[in-house]
Length: 205
Image 1 (spheres, rainbow, N blue to C red):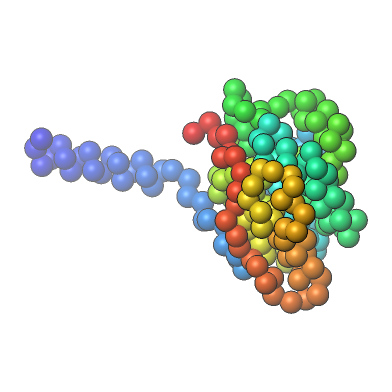
Image 2: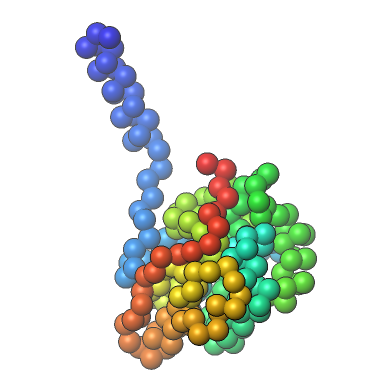
């Protein structure tokens, strides 16, 4: 390969890389990445419009055994209710791509939510993976807690027991509720980041 061709190829690769969208990885203590989406009821949801309220983002996939652990036991619903009863905005997000495990239509999502007696403030379908990639959501569940100023206060697992066995919920530390307790007490979140566990998010790429 001549130097000229090699230079041209290198220049083309650089141009392609520059043309790709660049997202800053979400960082604890920094503003949570903003996004706008339509929920399963057709309502527009823009994260930044909820500044002044705490927000929890939950990545979910109803067919994932780790999600089944928390919903089948009622743990996720209890966590949701505890949070939303305090005025927290809870957003469940499904980033499973069409044809992949966990992909649902809005009607299917509503049925799943009703049957599980779930309590999110909004449920958003993200089959393109746009929001999931924005937050680098890697598992279901993967949890994010955002404070009233729009700052990311917690990211990671829902609790301290990474087994899919529901029996391990008892005695586990619920990191989401612990983060909310710290925020309500106006103190730094003691455990601000943990390793998320669960099924890999079923992105299209």
